[in-house]
Amino acid sequence: MKRSHLSVLLATALMLGGCSMAPNLQIQTPELPVQHTEENATAEIVTAEWWKGYNDPQLNTLIDEALRNSDDLKLAISNVNTAKALLGLSEAQRYPTLDASASANRQKTSEESISPLGGMVYNTYGISATLGYEHDLWGKLKNQENAALSEFTATQAERDTVRITLVSSVAEAYFNLVAIKRQIEITEQSVEAFKEGYEYRLRQHRFGEIDPMTAEQAHTLYANAKLSLEGLKESKSLNENALALLVGRTPKEMNERTFTTVKELPHPLNIPAGIPSDLLQRRPDIRSAEELLRAANANIGVAKAAYFPSISLTGNIGLESSELNRLMQNSAGVWGIGPSLNVPLFDFGRIKNQVAGAESKQESAQIQYVKSVKNAFKEVYDSLKKIESSKVKIAAQEEGRDAYVKLLDLSQTRYDAGYVDYLNVLEAKRGELDSQVNLVSLQVQMLANQITLYKALGGGWKSSAE
Image (tube, rainbow, N blue to C red; front, side, top):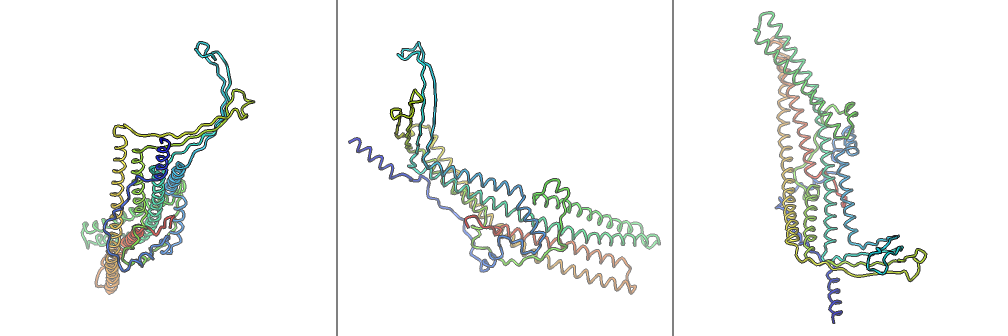
């Protein structure tokens, strides 16, 4: 009767094998906006190599160099490899272990013991194989594997985030360098214009046409223009250092850096307004947050499994003899097999607190996931608004620049006719050059906003699963 009860118990345990203690995960996504009619057009623009739309071979070369050499990306890839190894370890935990061992021992027993074999010297030789297996009754090992898989997928998403950030940073730094070089050219013309104005005022002062204060005011403008030019040259050097670091160049290569760029900023790409419906799948940081949430949920099942008994089966077979030449005989054979049962009785709240800790981590992961989703949509909304605003600002600045060009032509014509002095021409020229510098700043800001939008939309990067 007892054997029958034991058989029923074992059969029940086997039927329950693989039962998971992890709760059913309900991912609480915040309320999302109504889809825009132009969303498909936006999704088509954002491709995996979106930067090639600017048709700049120098930019393409720098990004390729960064993807090959970036230390941040190499570190992220290393983290993926580590997570992959841990996943393999978790998968292996679900399978039996088979170990082989061999031993040779020589020992002497005490002559002072009560054993009749006291004072004897003897040898023991052995060869054995041990098989061990833990039956995953409550899904502990399966949940550990699920958690490791989610963490592995999360590290892949984090690698993708690093890649998107790297590409965006290189593109933005490159366009900043193009803009700075262009502003240096314009500012050098401004310095010459202010120099002419100062020299003109000096001549007027010599002939007593103006007072010394007016001449010094022109001198101040000239000095400030030279200061602005030096500030731009410093920005150029610092930007080149940052770009060299982004593309992964060594300190020696940074010192010998040479960056060839186009002379003019490219036209912004045509990005229609709208948010793609698959934003949650495109953004790697959202994918990472979701996978970490799944991992935290699986770890609850691992913690809860500790409440229940664990059953392990161990068996061994081998040979043992006191004489090496008799080790391989049938009479030297030994074996053993038997299950072991481990039942938690009193742990003074250890398991309870472990479960509470796992549940708290799952709650934190849920909050982080929701936060990531909200932040993603905020970044998209902000980028779209900045792009819209940049268009208006650029149009206004172009209008102002055109007005200064007309003013310069009129001033030159009136000066040639003798109606105004040359200072009017110089001031119109200064205003026209300043408007060009401001226009370049707005144009590069437009490109930066566009790059930020690509980054906010997930950069077009597809996951390994896709």
